[in-house]
Amino acid sequence: MATPILQVISQYCEAYVDDIRLSEVRETAPALYLRQTWFFLRVAISLFNVPAEMPEYLLGTEDDPKLVEPTFADAMYTLPEDEEGSIVIDLGDDYLGFELASCRQRSVEQDGRVEYYAVDFSYDAQTGEVTVNGTYPAGTVFEMDFASDGQFLNTLTPEMMDILGTGFGLAWRERFNADWLSLVAKVEDKSFKEQTRSSDKRANTEQIEAMRVSFAGKMRRFSQNLYYKNFVPQGARININVVG
Image (cartoon, rainbow, N blue to C red; front, side, top):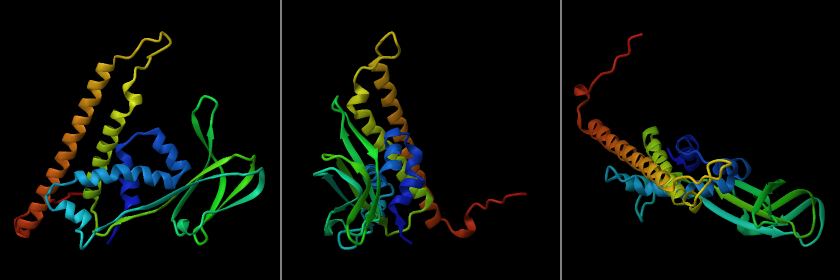
């Protein structure tokens, strides 16, 4: 039985990250959320290489692929004139048939920051049209994202999905640690005392290393469990009896 990509992300990967930015995107732009989280899950898939047969189980081969990747599209539309009521944006055939759609108003503030605002919209997968409801002045920019879920054609067990979730968390943490915002100096309080960047960097490095050890340990136990199931006769296995 195939395993949807979104099932892995929502039931396992989310447990290993604490990112308010991703959480906001999940609530306001689900299609964009799938795109952003697929970036990390794809890395986790490449890291899940123990036992040696695992990459082929997840990905398949060139002649017999076992992974159907999610598909994505995006578009931006600027209103040429003031609009009120139902604004129909016809995007054409390239935007037909998507399972998820997101539409946000994109605004560049005076200080250069880009902000996004929720809009009342609907998406017609059969026509590729996005309808935005409301009153907007000329020059308003709408940013739209579209996505359809992918799937692993081979069934993933809860243990496999948990390992992918752990790898997802590791990929997210390493990317987060390399974010320039985490590297620049920050003040601690009203005294404007600067944080000690060396101690922060050391703590982050230690946390990432602990996550790598956990990820490797889970893969190793998974491999050992497979060996046990495949090669230890049923009669020689340990029986676990629960006494009520």
